[in-house]
Image (tube, rainbow, N blue to C red):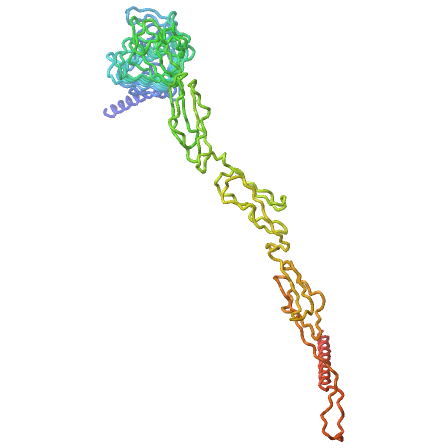
Length: 633
């Protein structure tokens, strides 16, 4: 029996889980589900539901889901009164109008039949006790109303509506009865709705942020006589604002039906004198319809972006958002507007003068910005003197206008001043030229242009100039250390016929041949001047001859080439004298000795005999050497 009970309990749990997960299975692939299934899915998840692209589409059928009441053209569905916070995302809702038989309007207590053409919208009335957050959903013919509970508590409830689209809401506001004191309505599209956003309730408003929304053809899809009566925003007569209320109304795109077409941007049923419509773009057309049966204080509108808010103009005084012709009749922010009157915001266009340094990647000075300047006022001066290291201030571009006629940005211009003398370098740049002085035979002119005064004179880039048959000897004029003006430096050359890199003028010498005899001129000195180093030493012209002497050569020995001044002195050897005289022997007084008388000098004869013998021996030696050589060969 116990096991049977366990099986029953398990089966019931499984069925509950299946029931809870059934809607999830229906939309897992982005399919469709009924309105009733949607309600069950939200409740099953304790108020948090991500439809992942599912479509909730239904016709009114009270056999399936009760319509709580009919209001004007709306079938109201009240939901989630058992929940606290509700968060819904990624669902596409579509109401398909159909006839609704015998239903009360909720006020008269009488039942009526309604046609599909009469009841064109469904209205979601969120009755949960906490906040409502709706993200990335679409609503076709559906009004969203974060109504809350009867006493609208707690006071910290919020309403967040972002990234959604509401379209084709007939004769009613797309977002209606926004009771929470804090609301964020951003980046949505409202298309072909009779009104867009309607705030209701007595809770003092804390922060209302309406930003980045597109309002396309608002307040046209309405019943006869109701076109252009609701506007983009409505603040009901019960709405309360004070100095702590922060209202942001920014980034709106109003298309299809505009202020120029009679659209009231704001329908005002309560005092807004303490409200600043922060974020509204100055100079963009804005209208307020003061409705009801009493005068109401008008809101404030920002200045900026080149516009100064002047006030509110009635239709008779309005010529456009920047037409100040009837300024004397404009009402200031906080003034009382007359019931049933549409007022238009008017700005005076103002201009901004900016001074900027014009330097990328560096801040020479912070921009000086003078905003909110009326046309015709004197152009404000730059405060101070522009200064930049390495540059001199050269003025503003464009040239300063005497008076303000439009927005103007004046950009500082600068001239290089590398030497810091306060004079633009462009006025102090010179050219240095090196030329060969030989019509280009040695090298082409070398030109260094744009050299700042005071800079080091650039050296000749070619190193030491070279020219065939010459040696470089310098520049004329002498190269200065720094540049002070245009300069041309011309190469100077010295002949170098022997190509040894030394000027020939520094290498010419004199060779002298002299007889070396004092007190007597054997021959006149032979002098050869201007001999280039390395040239062959000139020979003595002739043969040195001196009576009684034999020429023995020169001292020092004659060099093959000239290397310096040289004096070569002839060397002499005295020639021996042979007289041929016979000297008789001394007389002995005896005549019978038989001695043969001498007929010559026997010492000379012996000398000659000796020379002949030596010569014979030399010839014999030569003969023997030749034979041996021939034998070896």
